[in-house]
Image (tube, rainbow, N blue to C red; front, side, top):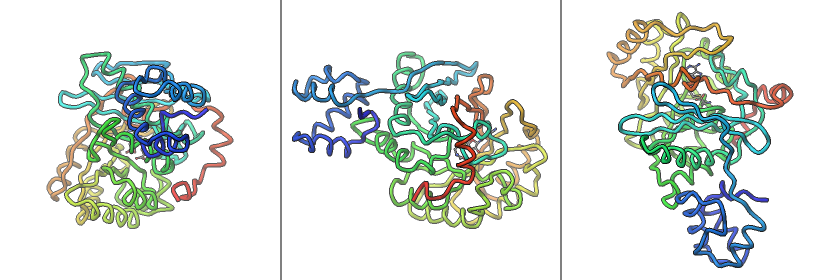
Amino acid sequence: MINLLGSDRGMLADYFLARGERSFRADQVVKWVHQQGITDFSAMTNLSKPLRERLAAEARVEPPVVIADTRSNDGTRKWLLRLADGNCIETVFIPEPDRGTLCLSSQVGCALNCTFCATARQGYNRNMDAHEIIGQVWLARRLVSEDGREPPITNVVLMGMGEPLLNFESVTRAISLMLDDFAYGLSRRRVTLSTAGLVPGIDRLREECPVSLAVSLHAPSDRLRDELVPLNRKYPIAQLLDACRRYAAAAPRTRITFEYVMLDGVNDAPEHARQLARLLADVPAKVNLIPFNAFQGVRLRRSEPEAIDRFRDVLLEAGLMTITRRTRGDDIDAACGQLAGRVLDRTSRTRRMRDPAPGGTA
Ligand code: SAH
């Protein structure tokens, strides 16, 4: 049975036209589902009774199931969500005085094997469907408004589990619902996709679904980046930055965020900062320094605060807009790179997926 939670307005219009209905039924259903949070077709009172019955017989609106709701001392919330096949993923909500940021997962696990990321240890099971991706927004919106004390969701970042550009179709369909005024009505600036650097995917995003882009750079040389982000062997830094320049050129006045995880004694020396500043000199960039978040079984360490400040100052002096990301939710393993969920059947698929083809986006 089709799960209409993940259908955008265009798809729903096709669905209704194919059934002899007018296309504006799509507008109505999108509003019921995403603005009113209604999943029961019989409650959609502006649809005809026969249409409601037909929908009930052949479709459903089914979000993932919340199996844990954890709250950090700093107010960050993390939900463990179970998908229909038993896999679990995590979603994080970060309230701040002036905004609420929701961090979404896009794959069950991840195949990219970045050495500093907990999700990589989980292996990879599968891409998430569009209804599972937008389902995180659907659920979070309800849970956050029930709480009453929290700010509404004003920003969405695809920075949870998985590489969103390896799941292009479902991710962009979910984004089209985030941007749709009949659904969540977020502006493109407030939806950020973070990628480990899949060059063809960045180009395709520029053409088909330009939202804010964040790139996980983490190292200023191919030699070091090959180690930290193995995808770099396929798409080295020069190619990646070319794609970033194309992306920035298509969207004037916006900057690309470059994420840089601060690892003690690995990539945090002033010389690395100087190299990074040279690399980004002609890219409309801002740099986000992320103090490394540890997890079980990892030997890497977070840079000392003085090293992070020194690194930041080198970049600022070179004229680069730079901030250090405040660590949020690490007491509940909800900080960057700590998401794990529960990935089923990971060994066989991880082996098959070890070297993901860029065709994932083609
Ligand atoms: N696959 C995408 C999105 C997921 S990761 C990407 O690579 O961008 C979201 C961000 O968290 C990335 O910048 C990632 O490099 C960073 N990250 C991963 N593990 C981390 C850790 N242990 N500590 C701090 N940041 C981490």
